[in-house]
Length: 232
Image (cartoon, rainbow, N blue to C red; front, side, top):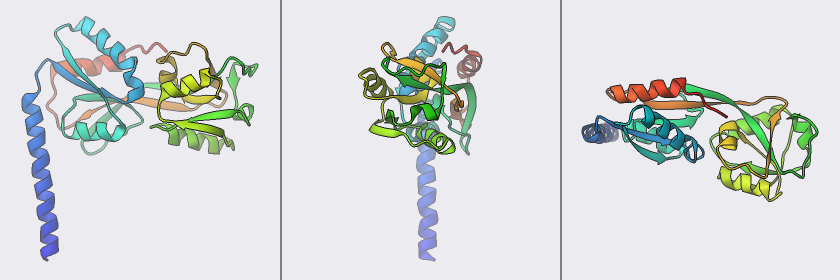
């Protein structure tokens, strides 16, 4: 019985600690400030582009921006340390709302020396070609895609950074597959971008706390993201 009581007491202590943290963050939030986060690949060019465009329409709004990994985004939203975030394939949960703002495709990056002689490329075309693996939020989806297409990539190196993967392709180390946003929001001079013959989709979502009191500023930004024309 003592162990059961201790577990309940410990849970109550943690809940109170979270409530105190949320209260503190709510009190210090300025009404015209948006705390925006994204995963690293979205933070390079896309997040600054969105912030700049929104501030042209609403110059009185201030932003605080962060690049975080998925688990950090979920934690910060739960604590109301950030207002809203952009991330791939993150679903709604008990405390988090998730809305799709863009659906895109995975694409192939290859050096100019490799010519596939077609607009789109199949997994069969990639057999034996050195492949650069990217560890990240979409890597599991890509692994499942390869299994469905009975394809085993010839991995020669692994990285967790899209820019490094692109640079390795540029240095003719091999090819890689990544999401359309990352492919077009990093410098792709020196590499070719091809469509996959068998399409693989991804969702970019805006995520935010369902515990936070809504504001006009934040609602305006949500509407902006929902209607934004992502030029890729």
